[in-house]
Length: 256
Length: 228
Image 1 (spheres, each protein chain N blue to C red):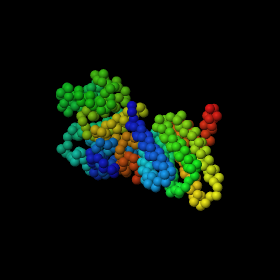
Image 2: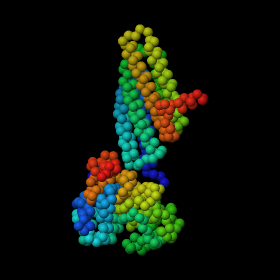
Image 3: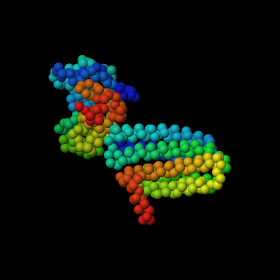
């Protein structure tokens, strides 16, 4: 486990996940620290994305799935029966691999979450839209065309818009599933710098199959293999002197 | 867009600058301890070396982290590689200061004034080389680095001259032999510091121009000198 320098934001205990009879995750226990970037790495099919999507119950929509164990956010099990999933997803926002802006204006994309959560005051909405776009390092590029379609933005801008949209509802945690894998190196660099800035305000959990990206952006790294959490430690430790041979083999390209 | 990684490189540069100031101070004090036969100053040099060693380990750790986590390329990669070598060179300079300060006891008693004049003369040039090589590193100034390389000859010349003078001393008794040996060794340690400054200067040229001028490639410097 990484050094407990910060408060713990999210805890999982013996968390297992099943697609029908297939156990995709086996007994994952992990403490995610606040205001840090935690990266999940591992080969395709290792369960890292399934685990990420379990943290705000995105997998609920897949039929035939079930979970065992606990995911505790602020001490409350998010799989408890009284949990409001819409409110959970406000607290634990998500950004996906492919940017998915709504076919609406830039402004309305960011305002969307605020409105469905009941914010009706136009000046409060406008203020939060600006704050979110600034936090996502997009404001200066779009401030003069907020009423233009979000679909006219470049790929990198669209992804930062999706980040702004996630931030607008003031989440505690932002989950990012391969947020830069569809972007060119410059747009990727912007997203990575943005992640570094965002951790001052938010807790970030990122899945990436780009190991170098995990090394660059994260404070703690978890290596998954065949549905198990093989090793979880400070990113520097994982990439300079991992404890487990399997981790070493993976990050040095000696796998299989 | 300013990269967080480049801020880290700037911090690395600053750490090396702080370390080089300590090394310069340690060289200065070691020479003073010899000239004044001052044991307290020699002790200061010894304790400064502990701090210099800690800085070396800290900078090594930073470089390892940057290489492992940031995948540096081109100028950034050359910078970190050079920083690792410069770090090592500075630490060795600190060790040479310790050696010099260690001879301060052996030099008490009567001395040859003429021989003793050579030591501070060399020390002045050497200190200047250390500070200039680091300034060249901080400024990324290849011209300044080149000037450091050229000064190394002057130090070598003074070192040779001191050695010859000692060989020509009349009727050595055991005490004067020990003093003479101490002087030769001080001179040799200064000469090594000068060589290490030259290494740093060569690294600066590597960072700035991606050219290697050490070893056989020193020809380019000789050609420069002939052209003048």
